[in-house]
Length: 255
Image 1: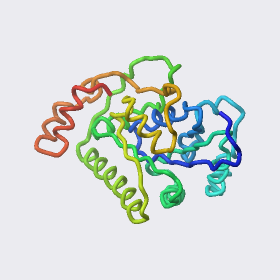
Image 2 (image 1 turned 120 degrees about the vertical axis):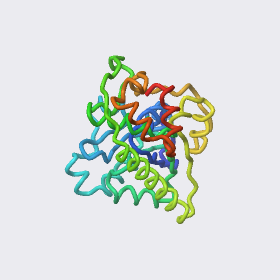
Image 3 (image 1 turned 45 degrees about the horizontal axis):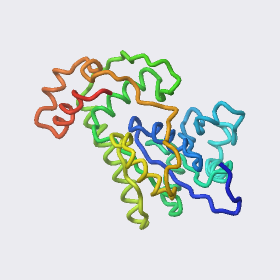
Image 4 (image 1 turned 90 degrees about the horizontal axis):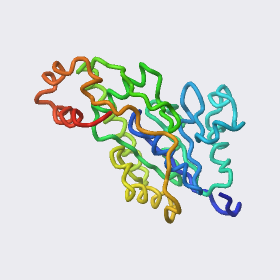
């Protein structure tokens, strides 16, 4: 999609924790003809550009160059819209704190905060992704069910819930301190057409000219009961805690 080169490009950033559907959201947005949305350009191990660009000879620098001068690399990203009016990036929990805070305080950059309501599902999904190394699941990938199982340590789960809560609280606090508006959405709502339209409207896209499509998709399709080895023990340990209801809800949801 070409546009007037004199037109100001709108920048946006997706702030997320792992396993909250951020790859899915980025892929959806990237499918709009006016939007170029990269994924984790500050992933510690690799630079994750927009999925269609990964099959092309596209590069804004090496990993070493990015890590040596991250602000310069970010400028290259912002200044390479490739004919799109809107350009976005994703910043995940724990990735390059300097850039994370720099973008967070950059008022002209629109902020999308993505959460997942069920923290147990997010925790188990992150544990499985860590063990299997499968963080993205593409539309062309073999649609096999992941059979990986994990043992959930309650103390670790509680720390995870607190750390994620603190992570999002810090984001919202800084945005409030700097007087910025933001858009908050949830993994569980991304299937909803109205929610997708609301996200696009926040970015500044007038309307969906065609249905948004995604090159990534939800992983698995396996009940949580088949993923947790110590489920009965976990149910006992979470009884009476703030996570008890989330566990019960998670048991009727595919991960």
